[in-house]
Length: 88
Image 1 (cartoon, rainbow, N blue to C red):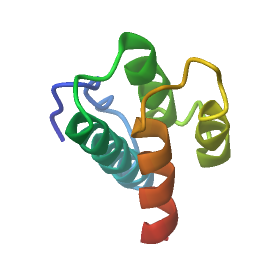
Image 2: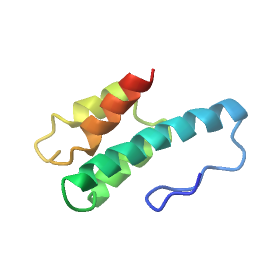
Image 3: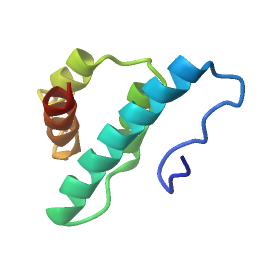
């Protein structure tokens, strides 16, 4: 899955890990789309956090906690969490 925001997937992923990353990336892309509806592109720190989620470095609960940060002005975090919870 090619994205203008996120890194390509490593070629040596198992089929299961690839599917999990694709799902996390779809959720992150959804978060970005919702945030963009509110105006503007996501900041570099939001994109870095979302990339960490896609890569499996952050859990869904950890992304949900990011919404409590003072500088977490992007609705991308909450949109991603909501999308992930609704799709499970």
